[in-house]
Image 1: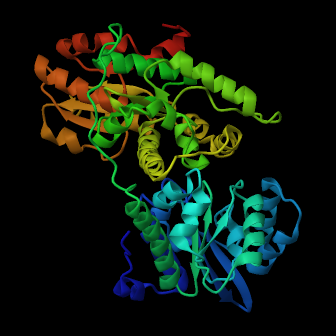
Image 2 (image 1 turned 90 degrees about the vertical axis):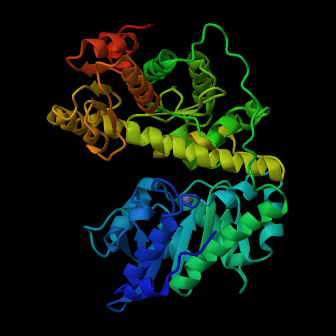
Image 3 (image 1 turned 90 degrees about the horizontal axis):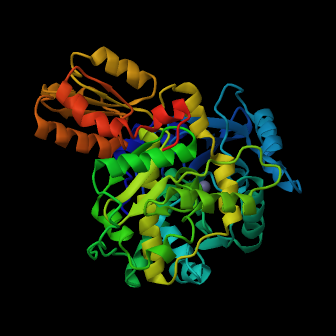
Length: 507
Ligand SMILES: [Zn+2]
């Protein structure tokens, strides 16, 4: 992994906090390090006679973080919490609020205690794919020792928050040496630290590069993208758009709300979906529980949604804590299919894309760990704990966006641009069709797909529907005066989960 450090850019930062934000963005710009709010960074500064820990606020994305997204905590107050025997998340949040120098600042990251106890000014934490590929193996600790020598400490898996801070503190206190430049957290990620911004960032890149080199030296880096031809499909399963729309309908009905599904037939997804060992490899669990928040613990193989739901309910029954009040719905978020590749589902197009992207990283981690030795994941109960704790974003989206998960096809989209805007504002995914080329760039956001199409031409309609259904999974509503387009959409509209959910109908 290349360092993106640029001395000139660094010199332009007016303060150490700005420098902290800039190197955080360098980390965030690399998806193989962190994705969708994962990871966190901090710097310890002396202000008005006291030490302040500036830590990234919870939920903000490292790729876009600015100095305003860091929470200033009184360092001594946070550090002293490590002396407690136990601290639940609610108590911890209350302690953080009390330690905030500025009450209007963002909510500090759940890992603030861990950052506080590390005796380094600069601290970086990522969920680097390459480190996970080495660690998520049968003899992960041995591989890590072979890759890193004594430059990192290895911490067994613990839940994020107090438990993890406590484990890291114990290990750091007893085992750190002058050569320690980081820590690997099994099934979770990696920390690096240093005395300057450049040293700390550089050590993170160095640790990730060393994991990459280790995988390369063991012929476990390159992922073969050749794949066997798919087996013939069962005769009842069509390959066309209606099969995709039926799959989206079934996933939506299982979730209890309409979802957007998006098909990725890229080489990596197809090659992974056709692995001869897919049933074994993909069913061991996620590369890190954090991924499961978006992808669920396991992908669905093929299109048997009822079978997936049954398995997921059993997983909940066996692993959910007795006091859990809200459990995740039993619908899959990732489907692996030898013909289509990867199909990701989400409460809207943004989250379907997030699930797809995270799973593509997971495929690489799993393939590399399996090539290195044997891929292993965590016990299901640990994964479900993360799904429960960090889930809930879908509920938030649905309570804000009344049309979340619904797909609307709008004909004459340029003339109907007001309608398109209103639908997007309510959270719908919109495929806009128009003969004018400007339709393609009418909106630049995940929920919009602009398709140049003459809606009196059968072939052009067919091509447009193909792209719309692959992108969003189906159609729930058509806004168009074109009889040709209406006729072409009818079979897809009959598979709309939104209409069925409203009417309480089942297929
Ligand atoms: Zn983490």
